[in-house]
Image (cartoon, rainbow, N blue to C red):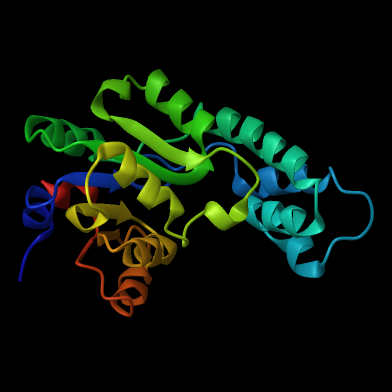
Length: 216
């Protein structure tokens, strides 16, 4: 069986999810606080599922279904994400992984449903900008471009000038695995919470890890 380091070394590029593999975006400023702030932008009653959700993206998706108001909600989410990453705990082992990939001359693109501005703010603040060659992340309120759709991965591969089949996605969500499979890329799933390994096995990714250090 091919292990995660071998999968990476045989790939032309790494597409790295941000929230989870790089940092816990809402580990300082909690996701439910962000969702609550976004809900305050709405007048009138929200659907119960949206009203109770801890996930800011549920609020964004609802706004997108409601029409032109989505742009304002997405802009506010971008501001809150940028505030969140300033206090986001970093994921153990990721810097060592990035250093290893740099030594192997394997380019890394961050591929994230979080806003591009927030991702770049985090990378700059932590001195990691030089370890990635690009960011393919949310730039507007079109939720149809976000994972599990393959758009962000295909955009990253196009930027690199490589075939998606020669890329490996590393992510901590089933949506990362789905997006990679839709794009034709390999995926290494990061099971960073109890129960995730069993979830991932149903999707048959190329590999599963429990710690980022297992990639090197």
